[in-house]
Length: 106
Image (cartoon, rainbow, N blue to C red):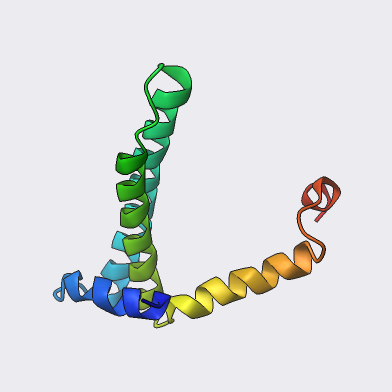
């Protein structure tokens, strides 16, 4: 499956009653909420002695992907375009791969 196919399939579950503005708001709020759930799993692992619950974390990452696809949809952008633009930016920022110096002085 391509990322654009994912976006199309995932958005079949989007609430059709939402206007574009509400879709964007819902997507950004959802990204924040699901990211919070992901970090809570990591917090329990790092600070509370729990085993890392990889299955649960993977589920939360899937929810994050859904909300990312929703945000792209609200902006009328294919998800692949957003991901490619990010790779292009990273290549400009780190043409030889990650360097601490470049991350500190951008």
